[in-house]
Length: 106
Image (cartoon, rainbow, N blue to C red; front, side):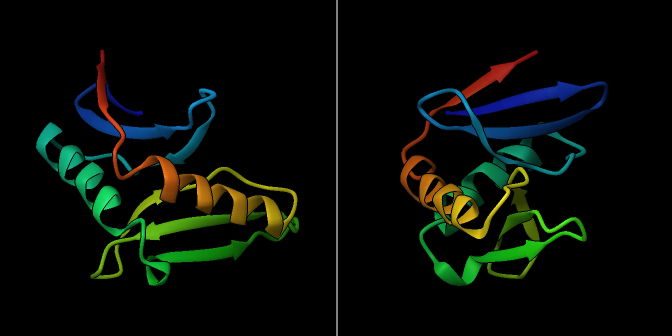
């Protein structure tokens, strides 16, 4: 499930797995329609391996970004202790995002 949230005058979304855990978080968007476009971009691009970028932080933890076809980051994962956790997170995005519903929260 995607959850679309408004924070002051900006919007952002998260993708949650079936167990309620956040697996992807977006940047802040200036408008609701831009955030909705971001959700659609995740749904469209999440099946393409080229749209994933894995990164390692200075502390050794790993996270990934989902990018649109133009290379812009549309979502980022949490930090994982190991690359295997990040790969499981990517698999969860691939599984959950394409058919996920959208729930608007205030």
